[in-house]
Image 1 (cartoon, rainbow, N blue to C red):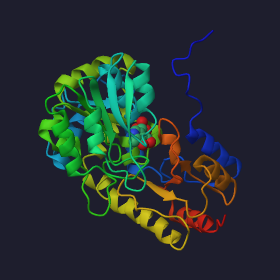
Image 2: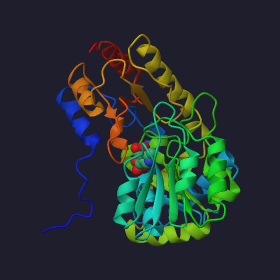
Image 3: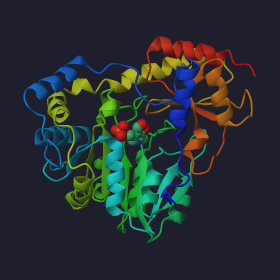
Image 4: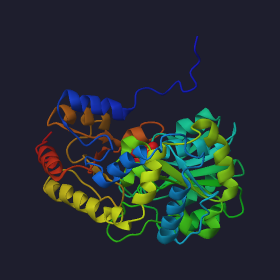
Amino acid sequence: MIRSKLPATGTTIFSVMSALAQQHQAINLGQGFPGFPVDPELIEAVHRAMLDGHNQYAPMPGWLPLREALADKLQASFGCKLSPADEITITAGATQALFTCITAFIRPGDEVILFAPAYDCYAPAIELNGGVPVWIHLEWPDYSIPWEQVEARFSQRTRMIIFNTPSNPAGTIWTREDILRLLTLTAESDCIVLSDEVYEHLVFDGHRHESVLRYGELAKRCLAIYSFGKTFHATGWKMGYAAGPAALMSEFRKVHQYNVFSCHSAMQVALAAYLGKPEHYDQLSGFFQRKRDLFLSELEGSRFSWKPARGAYFQLLCYSGLTTRPDREVAEEWTRSPGVASIPVSVFYPEPFDQHVLRFCFAKEDDMLVEAARRLKSIST
Ligand SMILES: Cc1ncc(COP(=O)(O)O)c(C=O)c1O
């Protein structure tokens, strides 16, 4: 008899909705992957690195020139000074970095504060390590952080706080005030902050990305996590990195070396060269903001309501003007007809919390977004 360590875990909603979308040939705005090709220059650079012989194990923390390029980029973006030698580690995507960080620090009984709706990989990683998720619920339409609640639930048992800005699925961003509240809250503690910043380049309407790395005092107890997949439309490459102070990073690496040891060599060589040109990533906000605006302008006159996403590539739409049926049920029905797949936001809570909101990924070609909006506008139930 096998005793599952994650008895409540089944097939993710992302797989369920994608399979349904395929079955009904629906437009898939459910799963969050970009519908654009990777820059041929980057692909050629990977090819060249392979031909040049970069096909054996990379160093455990990553190819040094890539870590140096990242240290320069982080300094230019956030004004922080990280040592490539011992404060940056290349990982197999952000997911591995998050898992590794949680495993490095969470012991049985440790409490971890996290915010729902949340990306789905945090809680299972906490539970696998015997930790206890302490959930703070955020609510439609603002999903603002209820700081009094966070302060009330913060205690000596709180070993870690995990947050994600810009947020998947909410499309919200943490403000400077939020970060300062976090700084004050954790100031006298040994609580570690795990900051998931995979959408760092996707911040709209002139706002800036409030990385923890901008705030020196806070950064001392933070690890920040990034993903090349999100930045370079290459989610299938599963490449990312963790950045933070040497004292935390050395514990992180102790787990990393037995978890994956090292990551794809040729991609690291290629990314090191590619990152040298900021134009490869500094246009992304404008590019995705235009996508968001196109999708929303095409939805004008529909019975959905929304707040424009401030970051990431997800737009939430509330359908309570159409029906009050459960979000999972309508997401499935509208995938079948009129043929647009989305993700019900209730699944991003520890127990389904239904506010009649669906998540749509707008990292897609324009004609696909226009057609999806046309179909959504045709819904009249
Ligand atoms: C908030 C968030 N964190 C982490 C990840 C995982 O990133 P990666 O594909 O690099 O593992 C995702 C992917 O969708 C995400 O949305």
